[in-house]
Length: 115
Image (cartoon, rainbow, N blue to C red; front, top):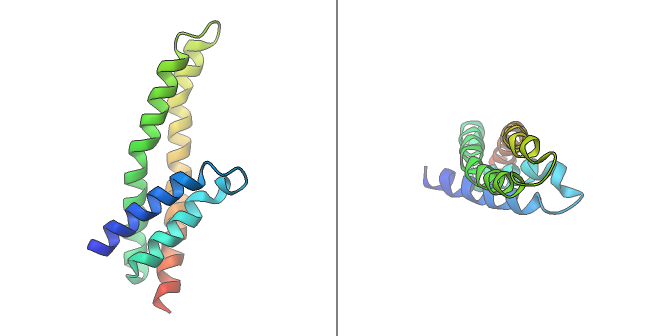
């Protein structure tokens, strides 16, 4: 279980870093999940566990960034309230994207490590 948790943390950090690279950000959870599953090395179940844990760990920075962005844009003129309210929706879309592609990448990484 220790390698699963550490693999999920590694995957979360790498996914977060990959999100800031312009072309790579669309597949960032896939790459981070692949490395998380490869490090966890527990077969299909280990990859699934590390992918789910990576998603759970990724919820924290996404909501923190969304909260900071929402509070900064709340007082902007004209569309400030709309933009601040839409940060929750954007955060949920990012989390769902991270969950689906991160779990797929994590399972693939664990299966590659098993071979």
